Length: 328
Image (tube, rainbow, N blue to C red; front, side, top):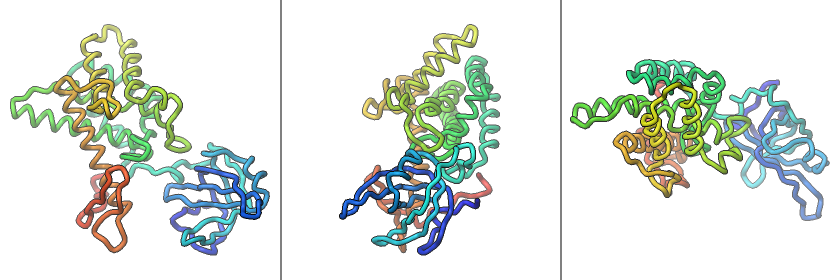
């Protein structure tokens, strides 16, 4: 079956396609008859679907975050398209291509992993290198790291987003160290790069990458900052003779990278490297988040974006180019 994407749906179109069920509710019409309202999603957007007949029966066929095959016709209600659904069937996750339903990094995941490994192999400190290799020689970790988003919605919220964000921070860290070395301000290059690569590894457990970017129970109860420090503790314990002082330095970077107690940071940055990591993380996240908002939410016939709910403002985007494909 060919996937029909939401962005291509048109009024009066008959469809038979797969979607991710983001929400479902059995409601009642004014006459008291039950109907099923479903929020459907793919990588291009969301659309509402409604089942008018056998609503309770169809509601039992699937759960929220299940993939479903939907048959119906596209109608318009109050200026918005929706699907008048005639049938629903749950589809096993192994028969679904996740890239049809979740946004994916525009950058090549294999090439990004290769670039990250080259940076790791270029470290001079044998201890920090061994810690990073303990993670990146672990096939299960690498698979999850490469699939994970860096956030649910704020920045790099796509498959491969965590890898893209971490690689970007490692590259920025290299430039920051080089700059301040010329200024006579010493930064521990290998420590900062290690922190840049590992700072968000807890997100491999905090956020689910399939079937949607939702917080796990562990993520809600503990959070990626503490989980990341725990993961580093465990890997370091498997490395014979890993220096305790170096472990403390790395864990401090992870525990302080949010920079402020108000933003969920268990510790404030107390070393030069921790201060540097906090600011380059904040820089990369905000630039990527705002850029993506401008590109995706340009207001019609305007040089400005739509209102950004988190930042509480609009952004000027008339001179913002699309991503340079040759640099991806």
